[in-house]
Image (cartoon, rainbow, N blue to C red):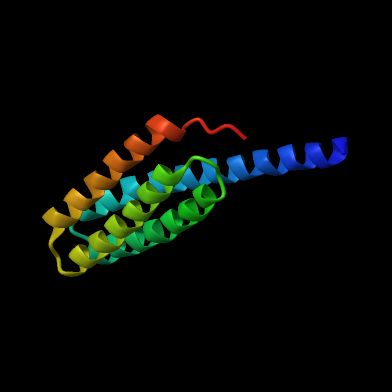
Length: 121
């Protein structure tokens, strides 16, 4: 029984570590997409935004498995929607509107971090 408990705690800690690495990747992509939008590099901004949408999907799945995280699931889905919208706006070369979406993602990240960071295993 003790081994099973140790395995569960270890797996949870590994999951938290993987999640932290995902958050770092999202932060780097967020900075990258903002730079690409400022340069009006639509192709690079679209690629970054699509990557962010995928990463928000991973975050959604992570939070679905945690108790009391309905708000985080909603914020994850909102982030994914914002990233998809940002890609569409960049494709239309509406860099101002895409930049507003990028800023909305930054604010959503901050809101989520207030409630869910640091995570407990």
